[in-house]
Image (tube, rainbow, N blue to C red; front, side):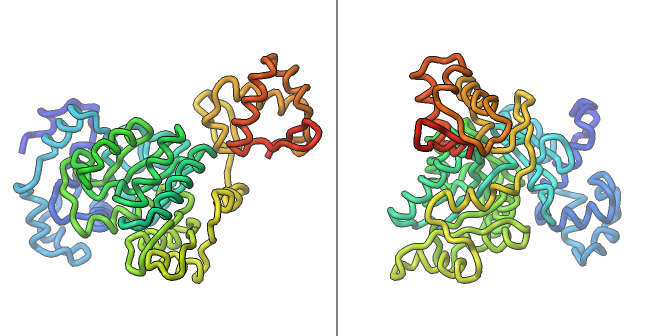
Amino acid sequence: MTSPSKAFPDELGDLYSHVRLACVPGIGSRTRRLLLERFGSPDGVFAASPAEIASVGRLGKSLAAAIHAPTDTPTADDVIDLCRKRAVDIIVEGRAGYPAMLARIDDPPPLLFVRGSLLPHDSLAVAVVGARHATPYGLKVAEQLGGSLARAGYTVVSGLARGIDAAAHRGAIKAGGRTVAVLGSGVLNVYPPEHADLAREVIDAGAMISELPPLANPQSGTFPQRNRIVSGMSLGVVVVQASERSGALITARLAGEQGREVFAVPGDIDCRMSRGCHRLIRDGAKLVESVDDILEEFGPLFETTIAADGRAVSNPAELQLGDIERQVLDACDGLTVDRLKSVNIDDVMAASGLAASQVLATIGVLEMRRLIRRLPGNRIVRS
C-alpha cells in the first residue's frame, strides 16, 4: 500500500486511516466502533497486533488478518482519489459537517460519503418510508406528505428505494424543498439503477449519502444498517405503507429506540400493505391523516435555529423564505409585540412598502407554509 504521507498532503490528517479502515472487508459500523474504543484511533487499530485485534469482542483471526492485509478491496488511496475526482465529500464523525441528529444515536457511522450538500438546518428532518410495491394510494400520499413537509421547511429523508421512498423524494423536490437519500450501496453505485435520474435530482436538492465506500455494491445486510441512518437523521419517521415484514418497520423500530417520533398512515383494512401501519398504530404510533398531524407533534420541540443569513428562527419554514416573503413576515412581526395578536392586512401593506398585489400573493404563500393564518375582517395572525 502506498504511504499516505507520500500520496496525500498533510491537511488530510487521519482521514486516510479512517478511509482505510472503512475499506476493510467484514468491518461494519459496530465492529469499527469496538475497534476504535479499544485502540483509540484508526492508526491505533493498524498498529495493533493480530492477536490484540482478534481479542476485541471475539472478532476472530480472519478479520484481524484482513485488517493487516486488505488486498481484495480498494485502497484508501483509490477511494480518496475517486472522491476528489467525482465530487464526493468524506465527513468523519465528530467533525464539522457531520449531521447533528445522527451524532446523537448510539451507533452513528464513523464515516459518511456525501454527494451534494448537508446543511445545518437539515437537522430539522422527517423521514418518509414505506413499501417498495406500493399502491397508487400509497404513492400519492407519500408524494403529498413529502411536498407538504418540504413546504413547511423540513428536509425529507428516505432511502431512494422503489415505491414510497422515491415518491417522498419526488414530492419534496417538486415543492422546491430539500431532501436527503441514504443508500444501502455506495454513492457512486446508485441502487436501484433505474433511479439514476432521481438520484441526480436529489443531489441538486440536498444530498445522497452512505457509510459505504463510493463504489460498494448493495448487499442484503446493508439495508437494515442503512435504516438506522434514515431514522437517526430525522426527528421522526412516517411509514406510509408496509406489509407485516416490511423493512420500513425496521426503520420505525429503530426510530423508537433512538427516541424519535413514529407516525403511520392508515389504509384499507383488506390491503396487505396496510397491515404494518395498522400494527404500528396499535402499538402507539401517531396516526397521520394529513401533514398537520406531523407538524403539531414537532411544533413545541424545536430550539432556535440560525439561518444562513445569521437570523434566529423558531419555525423551520422560515429557513426557506425569499426576500419578499421575509419582508412581509417581518412587517407582520413589527406591528405587534405579541405574535398571538392579529394584524390588519392593510397595515402589513403599509409597513412592508410593497405593492398590494405582492403582499396578497405573499400572504398566500406564508399561509401555505403555515406561518400565518387568515382571520375574518381582513386580518392575519402568526401561526
